[in-house]
Length: 370
Ligand SMILES: Cc1cc2nc3c(=O)[nH]c(=O)nc-3n(C[C@H](O)[C@H](O)[C@H](O)COP(=O)(O)OP(=O)(O)OC[C@H]3O[C@@H](n4cnc5c(N)ncnc54)[C@H](O)[C@@H]3O)c2cc1C
Image (tube, rainbow, N blue to C red):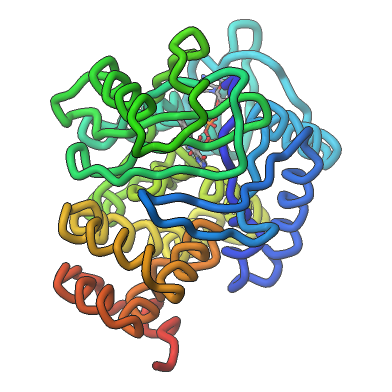
């Protein structure tokens, strides 16, 4: 994807529970910082509410540069790279055949890291259905930038409109479920109206259409039931990242989960039972977290909750601190409820959402003392 996306500093912070992962995630952090011209974001604005962000809360870097840095790191670690397209694959009892236009490769295992429209997924399981995908669409406003992210929550479609600054442009967009009955063009028109309006508070140049370069891209966006029945591992195959559907359904961020699942897959391949090992680690950590996000999603973007949240962000320092940690990836969903419950108004609203958060073992283990 010849574009850049914002990457929060999640790799450093969200890896805390897994000690051996911290070290490797630190390498990923270094990769982010090693990329050209990362942009540091100082605050996030939600309507009138401004949430200050500390130094390493959020870094925006070029996605092309970040991907290239990861590829170089893989090469240095001994991977041999073939720059071609996989056109087919087949799996038998003893291994995997991977076909490119020019060659056939035999391997013991295949790890599908080929994105939302994964060929590996289509061969070993089934493609995501329309209801399991969302469309991220919008435009890059070339030649305009700033040091704040701007978010506008929307009830219809449930989600938010965003502006993320990059080194030489603003990435502005919106996301909607692919089966929501709207089109990319309609969503972009909505985004354009927002950019032109005063509520967004963006630099005036951002509203000049000659600067706009449109984009549209599918992102997996699964429900809690989907996560419970997720196909991501089988005899001689594993799926990671978007190919496995590992994207936060609230924020639609997937880079952290792509890196985390790749770490788990790499570690599992060296274990005695790779499939069992990968399934256990992914379920305990990544899938447990994403299932919580999916359960929260239906209540999160409702108008009463959004109104209350934005008001609370304007008035309450503790709520701003929670939001800053959510943005920085330091706040996991599994402990969010307990932290919010300690704040009066939002705590009550959270209870009113009647969110069904399953009290599973992982949840109980991570429950902080109140
Ligand atoms: C507009 C937009 C903005 C986003 N912003 C953010 C963000 O700010 N933060 C965040 O965390 N997430 C963001 N995401 C989500 C994030 O981009 C994905 O979750 C993440 O890139 C998943 O990584 P991946 O490696 O699994 O898949 P991808 O990044 O999609 O990589 C898949 C790779 O596989 C290759 N491939 C596919 N098929 C084949 C084949 N047959 N043969 C060979 N190669 C193949 C592709 O060329 C591609 O290089 C955004 C997504 C979109 C669409």
